[in-house]
Length: 141
Image (cartoon, rainbow, N blue to C red; front, side, top):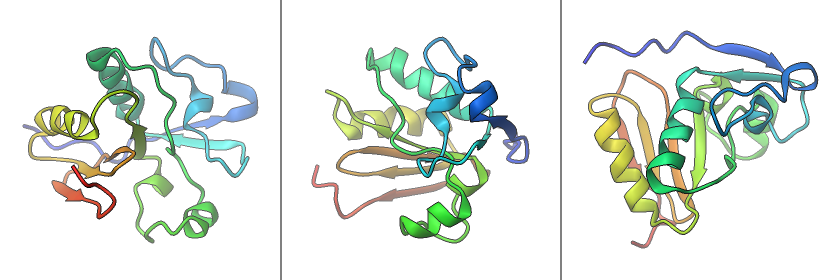
């Protein structure tokens, strides 16, 4: 597989473009930082992957966390080089689907790239060329 373009990031204004439809079921505002800031950074694969999960599992959901400002990322205990702060991550809550099923589905799609984390509440994804997989201590599957 070719390398993923990590550098392409779309920049949106929540106040001006929040209602913009990115995929059939996801709008710009759903990927905004929960600190209320107006700017939203989104890698183009983030909404596409969310839509794939929704379609595959017939599972409507809102992302738990996507873009985070650097300040908010620090406040919630995120790592310094977090994909969230770069607009390259999203946390997908497991709604009536086992988190491991979502994780396994995405692992097959990602193959030898991307960041996947398995949690009790769902799955973290990050867009990056380096393959990284982890299981959080909260997951008791």
